Image 1 (cartoon, protein in one colour):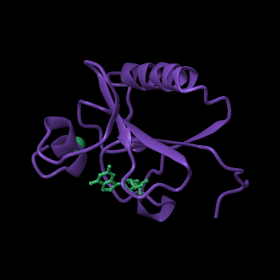
Image 2 (cartoon, rainbow, N blue to C red):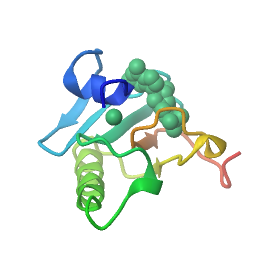
Image 3 (cartoon, rainbow, N blue to C red):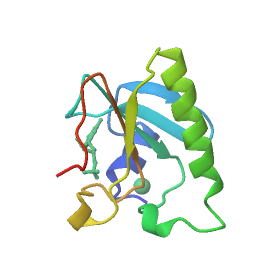
Image 4 (cartoon, helix red, strand yellow):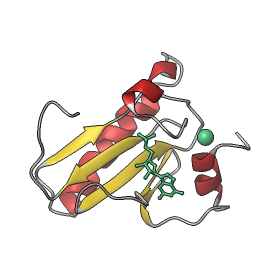
Length: 112
Ligand code: 5GP
Ligand code: ZN
């Protein structure tokens, strides 16, 4: 999608700090970190949000969770939170599916 911020990051049109990349997904540090470790993992193919996951495109979601587990192990992160905001009322500001991975501080539940 030509007007999508995260598609532009994947294309290298907007700079980002890479954590991991493969043919299906891209992980990069959040520009406004909410924890000592805060990165985002996104599918390379544009999906608008969790609400657009279907039987046809869901394989990448399983892949992303495998990647999150691998990054956590490589970076010796044992305790972390994975969040995906779906829709503006839930806090979604970028309409390209992304999983926040947060670690390095105590976290409360439920979130505000
Ligand atoms: P959302 O609010 O949609 O759940 O999360 C979007 C995230 O993208 C936010 O945490 C925000 O800080 C991050 N973000 C927005 N623009 C940029 C950008 O240009 N670069 C990076 N690295 N992160 C961004
Ligand atoms: Zn996109």
